[in-house]
Image (cartoon, rainbow, N blue to C red):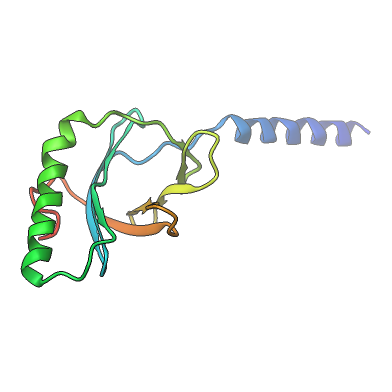
Length: 149
């Protein structure tokens, strides 16, 4: 009887410990791009030591077929917007379970972190399309043109 009570108390403490623990998001900077026939997205992400997430992802969507020259001009416009608007990005808080970032109380994943591979992925939801997973690469400083990296 004592053994069962002790085991139940130990289990309750263990469950409480896991319930109170919160995974800490990885701090760092990442950037990446996505380029498809009718969708372009440039992404810049920074997570500070307090877990604040700064994210900007300007996009172009539902455009007609374009020439390579027009596509390069669109890349340049998105990169310029990313750089110019970065100072106005406000911090966001996400729920983070050690691998997935979600809006507080939300269900849909917004970002995914693979700690073993040190890989960050941002999921962009445009209009009624399925989420677009955009793998990012870590950077020490953001580049003026994420398309070139």
